[in-house]
Length: 285
Image (cartoon, rainbow, N blue to C red; front, side, top):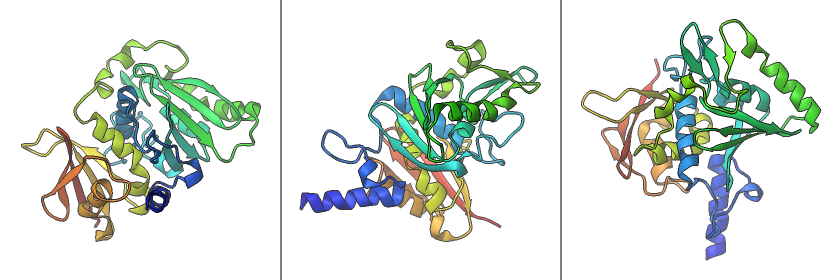
C-alpha cells in the first residue's frame, strides 16, 4: 500500500538522517527530498564534503595554519537537510560554524583556509545565510539555541569571527568578488565525474559520523588507481566498509544508482556512473 511505504520511508529518513517527517522536503513525486539535482549546488556540496570529511591526521587542503577548524565541525551538527534551493544545517552554534567556513587568506603561507568563494548573504535571529560565489550554491545554518533576535545573532557572529583579525590572517569574505588566491582553488568546485557521488555522500554524512561513530577522511588514490579513498578507523566491525556500503547502496536512504564492489570486508569500490570512491576501514589499535 503506497501510504504504508511512504510512512516507512519517512521514518527511515528520520532514523538515518535525523530529519523529522514534518520537516522533510518533498519531491514532485512526493518522495522525501534527500539529494539536489542542481549541478551547481552539487558542485558546492562536493567541495564541502572534501572539507568536512577530514581529521587531524588527514587534514583538508583548506585547513588553516591553526589546524582542526574544519575537521572538528561535524561534532556541532544536528542534521543536514536539502531544500529546493539550498542546503540547511541545523546546529546549536551557527555563528561558530560560519566562522570556520568563511575564507581567510594567510599571506605568510600563501594559502586560503575555509571555503574559497563563500560569502555571508545575511542573517536573522535564527539563520546565518551563506552563498558560494563561483557556483551560486546556498547554505543556511539554523541555530536551535538562538534567542530569535537578530541583534543578538549579530553580536554572537561578531564575537565568533573576531579571530579572523589575528596577525597572519586576512578576511576574504567581506568582498563580493572572488580574490585571485581563491580563484586558484577553482579545481575544488569544477564539475567532475565524482561530483554527484560526493554530493550524495555529504547528504548521508550524519549517519557515518553519529550512527557508525566514525570520522572518515579523504586519502590519495592507492597505487594503480585514479580515484580517492575514503578511510576511517573503527573500534568494532559494526562500522566496517561493507556495513557502511550497505547504508549507501541498499538501505532506505541509499544513493540512487550507486553500487558497491567488495574487495574484502574492509575495503571496496563505491560506484556511481563513471565515478568511484574506495571505502576502506581499519580496526583502530
